[in-house]
Length: 486
Ligand code: GLN
Image (tube, rainbow, N blue to C red; front, side):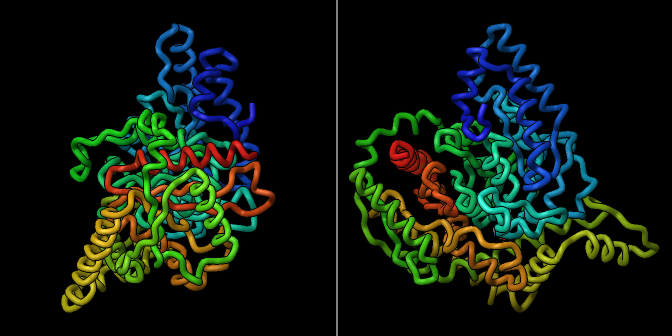
């Protein structure tokens, strides 16, 4: 069994044909994690006993000839800011190192009822703040394609686990690109759903108006199946959309004719000199592949793109400063001893948070403070609507927008840690999507068989609100074409 080649469908068939049992599969994945993970740092916590127990239950279902749900026995991983009852949820931070979740996030609950086996909690940048995994308070995860490079972030460990075959799919979280960017650096499919498509209940919040839970997979169909299970209305999240339900069948049924009816927009503001040569070449090749499938292309303009990053770095920290207030050692977080209350707050937060959360809490309080609120926060909200309007206008003429996911490939450890702004710039193409609440997907320009020792490059597709099916449909046909040329 090649763990890296497993898909949801192949596991389903093999389990039903009794080629292996769920216990055999999960035992092998656990062994693989034990052998590999110390080197790559994908997991912060592995759920050995619970995973095996769950596999045993799946085997009982199979033995009784009961219906095996499609996700039955499939190994999944969860980013460590998504709650799984009775297991740690550190959000990559020292302040939560002793926290044990007292309930399941809605996505966790849905995965469990679909029969998925949760293998563990994955490494991440502290409170999902970062683009490289280097802000994890514990240890950095490493890129399986080149161990001297970062896997991307902040969902670093989820990307590493899926790339190595330590899970078939994993959930991460997106606030400004934290699933698409690592998917791009690791050669995976990463789907950022429309804001409101997936419940945020049980996700440790970073910036609530931007956050969405998002799946990683090695194939488009697996990303679609994972999205099918986690999406849909949840009364426990007031921002969850009432009448939306995605079905993976929509992607299965997406025909070549439907593909040919689509027009893809290429926004001129995203094809800039800052993109490195290798990335530009891969994007050009991908456009050529889609043209060979007879897709139509059109140049478009998203005129407010240049303000997106500045706008994000005002709105996001403002929300961070409020969301992180609860980690004070009294309501949540590790508590130190101190005679005075003020000192205790200072100590708990001062020692518990790393540099990046502190930087953002300070920035957030500043932009929200009296006298600066109008100049920064309110202004940024106005810019946010201009950015959203740009997309709405563009979607009058095109069905999907194509851009590079990131301006560079995976960078080396330490390359951007000294200059936070250079790190922030790696999100320049992903952040506008979160501001506008749109769905977007990153797919690899090449399949593994054609990587020829190169680093992966991600192609980003941006869609209309709640039109994930079209993005996955385009990605499905692209993947089929490049896999066939292997
Ligand atoms: N890298 C971005 C940041 O640090 C995005 C984070 C995210 O999407 N969680 O804010």
